[in-house]
Image 1 (tube, rainbow, N blue to C red):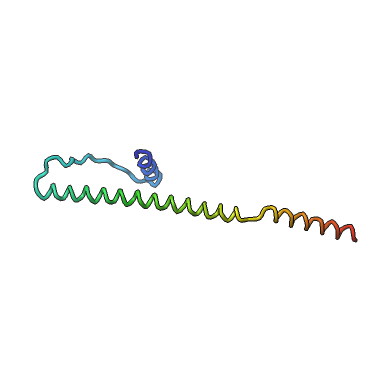
Image 2 (tube, rainbow, N blue to C red):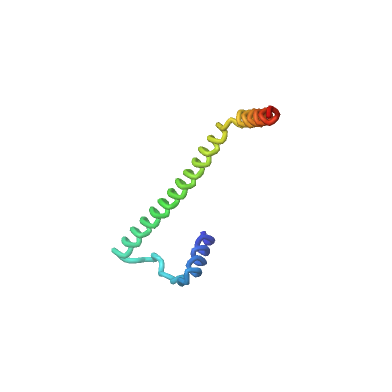
Length: 100
């Protein structure tokens, strides 16, 4: 969890931006509407984190599927037929040279 944050801080430093951390009091014993607001903020933060994780997983699955499709196309390539065709073409060229 820390490493991606450190990477982003480094990116910001390279862009001449400053990153500042500030301590914010937690949710201890807040009364009424403040407690409700904090609880709602927690729910939204958790939903956002879950959505980000799902999007990351979806992107990873997409990348894996793309690679699998590329590999399927390579598997379908007839290497033996290609090699036979190259040998036949080389034999024809050789025959043409000797015929001249």
